[in-house]
Length: 156
Image (cartoon, rainbow, N blue to C red; front, top):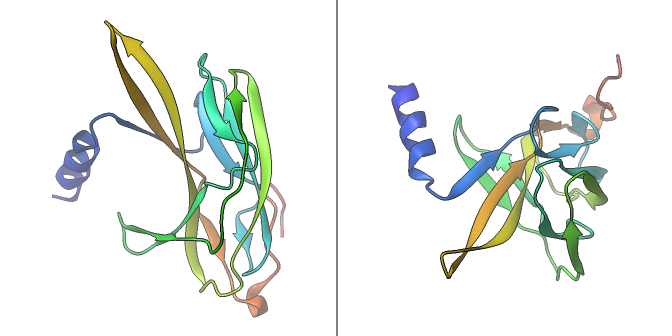
């Protein structure tokens, strides 16, 4: 039953392409560690090897932090303040790197960042926007007593 529900949800997303973190994916979003503490900075890298060009924000300030709230449920954690940024073209073969600070008040748990790319397309005199959502791998936020966040690939 779980698999039927998951398949239904994926099929019902329609024009929204979901992309996770995997070295073979043409578009991916990566965080620099697998664990953090509240208030720590996360370095995000958005890779584009898709053969396409997207408009993106240079600071990735629109990357949305999400907290796991169940097996298939993610709750957005909205940031305070304005997101002032300048957009630019992220061409295939390039990447953008930016830092985001986690809120000091984050509870321990599983989190990820989501970033939405938009590509304008014109087909047969009709234009539309293709929306692609990319996600970091899931990372842990730990209480200060639990440790200092570990970089990916480190052995600690």
